[in-house]
Image 1: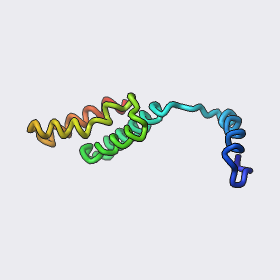
Image 2: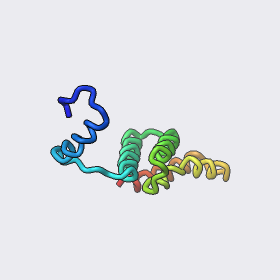
Image 3: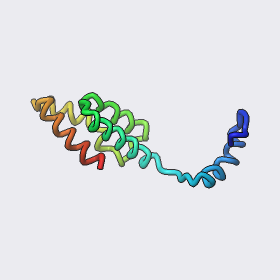
Image 4: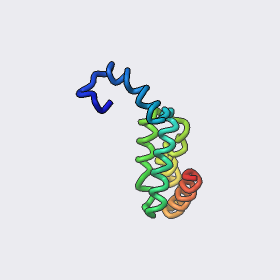
Length: 108
């Protein structure tokens, strides 16, 4: 593939399957890819000690971009879950602790 200069779709389509096989790459579903990215984000939040409340839209955006992959549905709706909890009078600190516990379980 590296030898191709400004390849067309058809040239890439012809060469790509052989290149993937040669590199021993396998295709994964969008859902599996979204799950892996979400787990990476969760681990980074936990390792950095960053506030998980600041990343709720990241998970929601990933869920949208993955065409609502069921593998990360629980993360995709966290923003709304937090809004409901806040409207019920729960403190941000209490919500934050539950988010951290949820992310720890999810990132395993």
